[in-house]
Length: 143
Image (cartoon, rainbow, N blue to C red; front, side, top):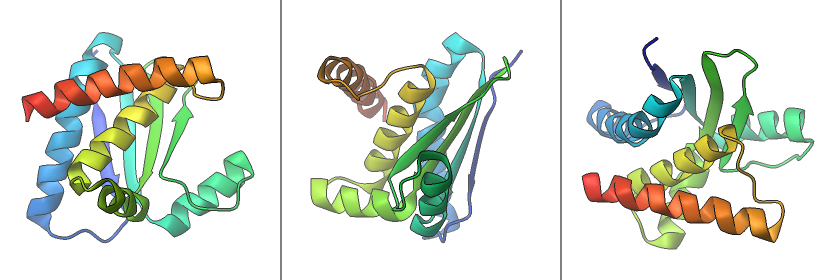
């Protein structure tokens, strides 16, 4: 079975060239780690309004968030990752990094949740963010 990554957006994007650049970066960031799992992942880049609705429906939190992960019960499908482009832009500005870098960070974070990582407890948070930082560092060296 081949690994498949589907990236789509229902948010307004800068340009077709920018979107191609971003999707290529996201695909490359995941491809390396997905190949070990041989599972499919769907990625949706969306708006604050849409992610707020999903956050309210599935987590009972009535506010937008940056990234949501939804695990799948289907063996070949690891799950879905939803990222708010607006939150990503805000966070990129605050961190003084590119939007692409922030999207890769959020994608990595969501992907780790699909693999079972969490950050509710301090010990879990330390472990998850250590792995996240390692992946992002490897990704940034490849670009």
